[in-house]
Structures are given as structure tokens and as C-alpha cells.
Image (cartoon, rainbow, N blue to C red; front, top):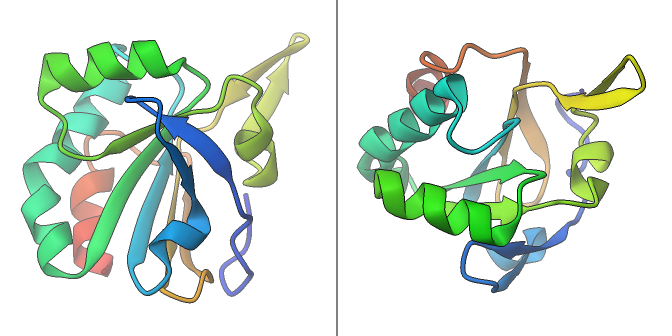
Length: 146
């Protein structure tokens, strides 16, 4: 996990609609960047729905919510539509962003995403970093910290 007070790594990833996003696109805004393992799994669904429920609070506080996993853009699109998620989901099948943000753990020769959430300020600095977060509690925790 990256440390608070460090510069957040840049990324260039496609969203659920195939549009490209970079961290620079969000300069001047707070970014809740959360990493999860897989679309449509129980924990990841609970976390995403929690962020969706609280999304108006994030917007009101000048923040955006972005989810990242190694799933494809097509998988993200189905996930977003199924649960009416109002925020961006980024596809990182090559795991470049996952590696840059130090959220992968190797076990038995396979890489698993450690559920991690970063709060990035408008200048691109990490102001909060939470690893091994609890899926159901994380959205409320982040809403309070903004």
C-alpha cells in the first residue's frame, strides 16, 4: 500500500463505456479511488452499492468515486447497469494501475487484489490510505473522511 503524503501514481484506463481516464482529468477534485477484486462478488457488490448510496454526499463535498479492478470494461458495464452505479469503474486487465498503487498480493503464484481505498486531493497527493478495508463499512468511512 502506498503511504499518505506521497504523490498518487498516474493512470490511463478505460471505463465501463470505453472512455479513457487519467488522474490528471480530476485535478482540483478529491478522488476516492478504491480497488476491488471482482465485479458481482458479494463483498465487491456491497462496497459498490454502498458508494452508490452515499454518492450524493461525495458529490456535495466535491469528490468523485472511482472503482478499479482487473475486470474488463464489458464486465464493468454489466456490473454498473445491474446495480445502477452512478460512478466510474476503470478496467485494468494488465494490472498496471493495481501494481502502481501496490494493491496486489501474490499467493500460490497468482495475484489477488487487496481491497484498498485511497483519498487523493486536488493536487494528486494521497491524503488517506486504507488497506484490507471492510467492504460494507468502507463507503461510510470515506464519506466521513472527506
